[in-house]
Length: 358
Image 1 (cartoon, rainbow, N blue to C red):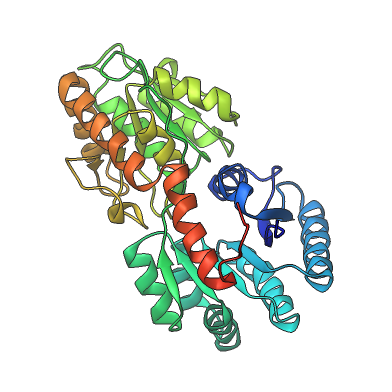
Image 2: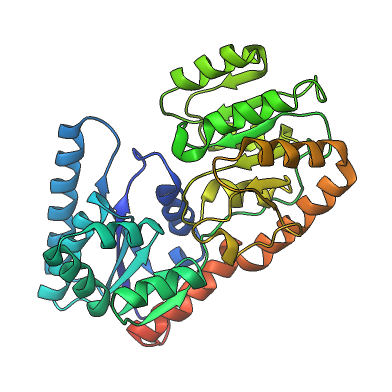
């Protein structure tokens, strides 16, 4: 039997918190692992500046050595800013070793990064995009933005998520509003506290759970000032099993971010049938429709968020129906098997079909 094609997967690793590693980890354990020999190399980890620098240098060196020894393709997972700069070095090594690479863009922040970059750095962005065998974008608007930077061979593929057999038991109940991810103004953490305070009298049994790392002090101070300290819980970072339990207990998931890519936290909530309130930023509008799969609110709008919470808590049947429509949406477009199948088609076109491959 012909050996499986060797694919070098470059991106953050298990010591990195956030959605990019979550997406990579899901794909590493997807059906793609049966069709390809996936070798993962981490170029980023959370920690001190020194730890990050060591990981970047070690990861880039390992990636380069793997390419010299010989791989069939490099699959680069990138955000913006420092993440892109690391991956630009990896892309350069791929060109030097004549190894085709896929550039998988995980953040709509590439637009902000590109617009604020120097002329030389913009040229690097364009070179990385043009030289890729394929650029993967997480949505329509995202793909258009990348092609506006540099015309490239591109495709739209959503992030993957495992869809459990059953929806969470908290949907339509009296559970909390939950948000998972880094605590901070970028994710709208204090906006959530303000929204909860606005509906506190009408929904006295409800509370807010913020599950993620970050600085909790501003959130705690605002909750105390607004008189809802006893109704706001900050758990710190939680692992996947604990996130699943929190989602199963939640009545609503809220992510009022100022900017997003295609947040894994949202996909995980929708996969469990939790009705979601989000901002129409990044690739989110490419996947869901307001009032059908989720409720949209504007960033930094506590009153709008409070009204959305009141609507879902006051109409549990509507909340359950919306959660089920969202669950069906991610099953059709974002389930791990669907996404793995789409990527497999792309990889086959790059590498060519190989007889005997599983």
